[in-house]
Length: 160
Length: 129
Image (cartoon, rainbow over all chains, first blue to last red):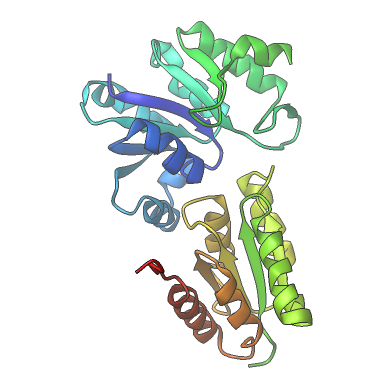
């Protein structure tokens, strides 16, 4: 399958993703999954500038991404899916749509009701509930900010 | 121009603070026209809010290290609807030094100068021949 990474990161496409993960995974396509961004042409332009032609950048709503998941899985082009928040990933994963994939928690910072779990990861109780539900749908959930750092499985995050 | 432009350096880790400190060591109090912001531990919303609080209502140039990242995005969002603000990506010391002594120029000219000075200062040499 050619979805090489599904990552939750509120910054979506940024240096860690383009340089850190991009160097490791050599993606042909970034899919930015965010309902608000999918409706904002000027913000999309900024994100396109970030990649500067090295890979295709696609913007999608959560529902739009669900409709194209099989296409991206079957496509030989290597795709990185970037999702801004955990509730959106839960919607994306509904009906086991992400079964067999791994969801990488890459960057969620301070927020109301969230506590620090890792230096780059702040989670609230509702986030943990969502992550448990995602994991129960056949998805491996773990945290890792960069490819060369240790993967922290969901079970360890819940214990933190 | 009614007021002098401010400069804000937004960068990863300690880069911004270190660059402003370096400007101070070279140019003295002229560095008071620069502020430094790190994106460390800040999400996109917090980073943008921090930047806008520092910017206030002054005309300004926002210098960022990487365009493709949270710093660049926050800067572009904060300056998008203000004709008296500009964003310069790929910040380096020569461009900041030029900025602090030319804050009286129109914003577009300040930004263009910064890019020219910054780019012009990047060079390679092969001293061994």
